[in-house]
Structure formats: C-alpha cells, structure tokens
Length: 359
Image (cartoon, rainbow, N blue to C red; front, side, top):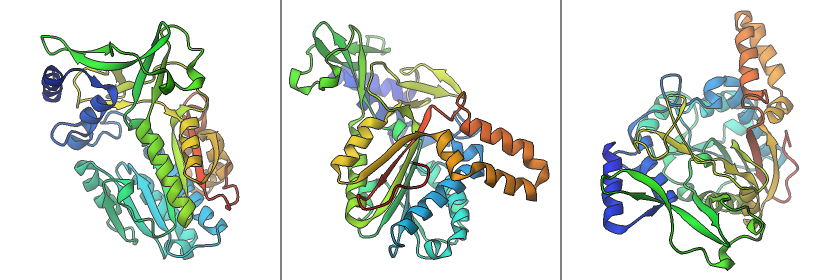
C-alpha cells in the first residue's frame, strides 16, 4: 500500500468511512503525497495524454475561438485569459501563438493560470517564459478578481473534480463511501442511512435496483461561479472534457496509470482519478449563474467547424513531411472511435452575446 493509502486508512479508523469526494481530494491533492502534488502525469512517459499534447492545432483553434468570442462581444477592454488546470502549459502556448492573428486582443491580455500542483507550475513557467504576455498563477478561480472580461478555457479539468456516488437499494438511495478493514485495505461500502427523500432529484425516481448516479457539487458550483463572472463583466468560457449530456445511471469513476486502467482504491496518490462530466448539470449551473449556455457539442464536430482541416493544410504546406502526422492527429482528435465523440464542449457566454463559433 502507498504511504498515502496507509494515512487514509488511519483516518478512516479514527473517524469512520469517508465520502468518495473526500477520498478523491486526498488522493489527488494531498500536499505531501497527492497525485498532482508529486509528479507531471502527462505524455507518453506519464499516465495519460491530453488533446493539447496530441496536436498544436487543438490549442491554436481554441485560442482563436476565445479571440473571436471577444471580437463578437464588441472587443471589451482589458480581457483576461484564464485557464483552469493548464497541464504543462502546452494549450496556452499554442493558444497565444494563434492570437497573434488578432493583435488587438493579444496586446491587452493578462493570462491567469489556475493551478495547484507545484510540479506542473514549474513546467508551465518554463513553457510560457517567453510568451510575450503577462502571466500569473492562482490556486482557485475564486482568487481571480471579476474586474475584467474573463475568457476561460478548461480542458480536461472538470473530470478530476471530486464526485459523490449514490446507489439505489430498495426504495432508498445510499451514499457509497470508502472504508478500511483491520489490515488497512480500502474498500467501498454503503452509508447505513439513506438520503432524505427530498434530497433525491426527481429524475432519479425510476432508477433500477442497484442503479448509481454521480454528483459533482464542486463542478456545478464552479460552473455557476464562472457564469456569474461572465454575466457581470462579459467574456466566455469553453469547457472541453469527456462526459455525457443526458442524465442516466451508472458509475464512471476510474483510475489511470501508465495509460491503462487501474484499481480506484489501489495505491492512492499513485494513480490519476477521474469521472465523466455531467454536461447537463454544468449547463444548468451556468444558467443559474445568469449566463447563456451553448452545447454541448462533440469535440470532433467543434474542431471541424473551427477549421482543423484548413489549419492542417497550412501547416503541411510549410512542412510537407508532416502531412501524415497531421492527418493522424486529426483522426485522434476528431474520429468518433477515438476522442471525437466521447469528448464534448460546452460554451458559457453572456445572455446578450451571439452564438460562438462551432455551436
């Protein structure tokens, strides 16, 4: 068992079972042994690869999307470009390169990166040291003042926020918890008392026996907070992640290690933990925050609409030997059998703004 796993077992022995949300928070963000606190998980040598690491075209197109959203809102002064969970800084590097096509947007920019991991912050600093735009770091979106129009990008960020799971047993819903046995082995168990009937959404009333639903309160609260800022000061948000756009039953919590699935409760702190994003819930939260929501649309459709093929042709014209590589990158990002359908995009804009590109 990992060092963090032993600490979690001792915590459970002292206070009783913990929620999956608390377990995920400890496993991912414990400052001493948490997954993101101790490593750079990206790339072929890590545990997973994100779209910006697949192709520079992904970040370039998303950067131009944000610049176009700014233009369509009348070019508000002093825009702020905010990225949630910037990875190594690859997406932001590519996005800023693309914004050179709209210098009146770029020259006013302040870039704010929301990042908890000290390891990834160092990678981002190295990646963006010569980007030509002021960059600063904060630990939460709430630390960004809502004093300027905010243009927000979040790629594979919401999937790592902590969730709770509820299981239908008889006529009640019971929260799934994490417990430990006498040998400190972690396992799942159901809370002994069901949720109050008033706490169960109406959409869950016809669940089958053993049905599971997941709630990401942190994600919904953040989507509402982003929407409030955009409604008040202008801006736009583009959320890209893997997930679903209709409520249903099923568990999606998963662990990844070295590009393969791993045991969710095995060696906490050593594996990445994620869950599929409920885009309907995020959209509803954004509407509560006073903004308009567009989508979700599938990632493949978005990138095709934004011009990934013309961008590939332009790159290939300058680098003919890259044509096959660029084609393979488009297949990886857009093909329904790969990332094109599972990954989706949701846009949040002011109620007065036009529909953004790709939606």
